[in-house]
Each structure stands twice: as C-alpha cells, then as structure tokens.
Image 1 (cartoon, rainbow, N blue to C red):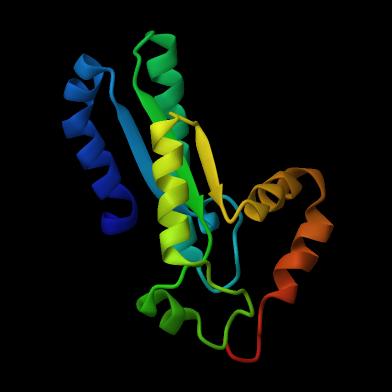
Image 2: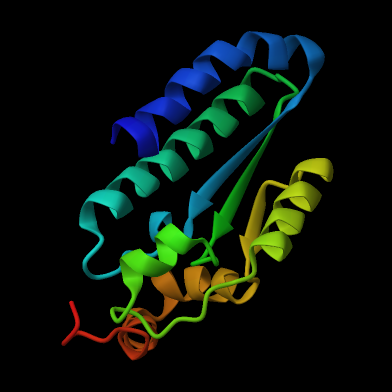
Length: 150
C-alpha cells in the first residue's frame, strides 16, 4: 500500500498547488488490476483499486471547484518488464505488451489531456464487461490463468 497507493497520494498532495496555478496535467500510470480483479493478486489489486478511486474522486472535486487540472488515468495491462514477467511466469497465459508502445500511449494520453487511456486498447472492453456481463468476463479471465502453477 505504501508504494502502490500512499506514494501517489503524497506526491499529488505536494504537486497539486503548482498544478492548479499552472493549469497543469497529472498523468497517473496504474494497472488493469485496479479496474478488474484477478486471482492471486489481492494486495496489489486493492492498492490499484484505491489509486483509481482516489484519482476519480479528485477529478470530481477539481471539476466541482472549477479547477483546470487534467487527470489522465493510464490503465496498463501486463507489459514487458523483466520483473513483471518473472512475477507471473507460469501463472498467466497473457502476452506482455511492448514497453515502448505502452509509453507512447501514456504520452499521447497526457498530451491530449484524456481522462483515461487503456493499453492495450482491448482492456477497455474488458473493463466495460466488468459490470455488464460478469459471467463472460470471468470466463475470459479464467482463460488466461494457469491455476496449477499458482
């Protein structure tokens, strides 16, 4: 929680006065696990759900106060970092996204002041399915898991 949530809150609290003054942008890089829970990732998912909720609430508060600070929430799936690949080796069948392409999606989202960015884009569909069709969503998630390895 300290790294995956509280550090976001502390840094945002420190930066918000100057961002408000300059009408700046805040780009938050989070995880798909903050939108769609997965098996075997409860503590990490909890922290990322907290990040998503905190920034969604902050966006609403700034909007109500007519403060022109853009908050871009970048929701990334598994990407090709060595530490991430090692942590899920054998547990998931999901393919890692290319890091440079994920970085480009984050930069584009921040530059256009988009409210949300999903990379790869198909994760946006998965997030929509979360509330609309819970059974098919669960089926899609199970297809990517190798439960015997966990």
